[in-house]
Length: 159
Image (cartoon, rainbow, N blue to C red; front, top):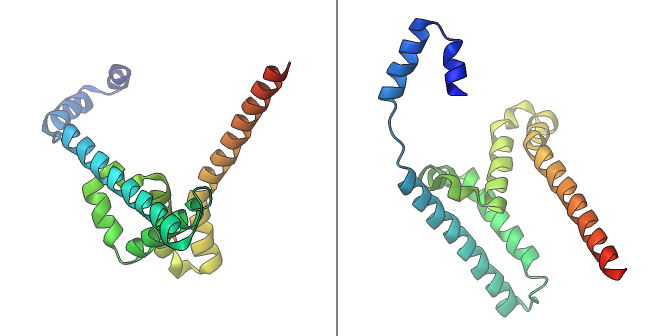
């Protein structure tokens, strides 16, 4: 596909592409993967510790301790985003900081902070849901498809 793209370029553009590719810095792939693994794992371990804390000290059951754990992770992520700390973590951690719930909370809160000067409804609300909307739609649609598959499997097993 890259060769097809180069065919559409004139000779000068192809020379520039070659020149730019030779000078593009190499990304430390292994190091980035290791940082993402460590940071994502640390966030998950922290979440699991919170889960255990809610079970042990607040008398939640295994089934319902996930709700306050998720809420706590979201609150911490939003606070760290507001204070500018999450950006520093994300610079080092890369994809590891995008662990679903904390990364999503960071994305939504940073959009809200960035567009607050445009007003609460059109600025904060509108831009938060530009980001959240596709994720919510995909989540609902995926849950629908999985439930249909589960229903069909249960129905076929009952025959």
